[in-house]
Image (cartoon, rainbow, N blue to C red; front, side, top):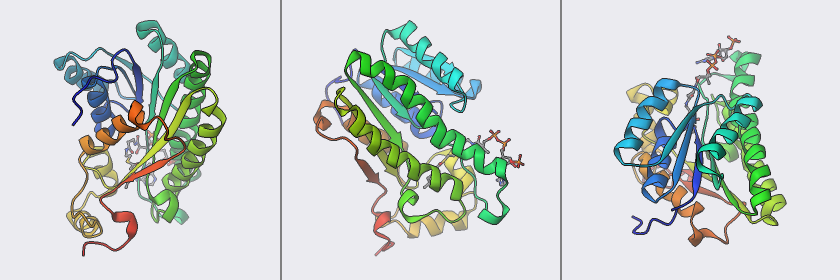
Length: 258
Ligand code: HXC
């Protein structure tokens, strides 16, 4: 899609970068010239992702990180600066999710998802933002979901956390515009990843129902989300900040397949 290596010389941290949409973004940014730093709680996911990045000769670093822990987040920033010198792009992609009706959701279940999605996004944005403010440039991209606006029956924790992240996107976009930092979000629809699939459409019936709700009639590929991520962190999008771009095949229009 892109012919120029327009991210050359830039370093991007991608949380949840070991699998799914996060890995697709890491590969895309790497192909476009960026140094990529992938963070995940899971060493095995990181090892496998590093092999893919190495095969494409993408300069990469993997750091085991639980975004719920501000000290681990700070260590991620320090290690990134140690290896690549600066942090130019942060993608807050790490997520946690499972379906559970609100009345059955334990306090710990609620807190777990809120801590990963809402608090983790804040810890990473704050730590990267402090550095971006000093260097007077930066781009932050948050991965959310359209149920942040419509409500997410069965996923109240994730829906509420993603709604908070949209507000965080808008707030930081204004606070940090003066520092030449753009903050945007993408709201992907159902995307072909094993992580989301296992949690949200494990049965063929659920999958078919979801497909029927998408005007374009199919799930997104992780690469399609990564292309939009590349656009939003590129210079072409230099006048876009505080925006949440919906990439869901038209699902949010709530008309289903016509
Ligand atoms: C009810 C559950 C549960 C389930 C976990 N819990 N799974 N409750 N139903 N299916 C409860 C546990 O019982 C526990 O509460 C609490 O949640 C914490 O569970 P742990 O397993 O100890 O947590 P942890 O090991 O930290 O794992 C976090 C996780 C897990 C979120 C629960 O699923 C995870 O690691 N997910 C990461 C990958 C992921 O979810 N990716 C999908 C993102 S897709 P108690 O009270 O028993 O102690 C996405 C897309 C959205 O977000 C958009 C779609 C359109």
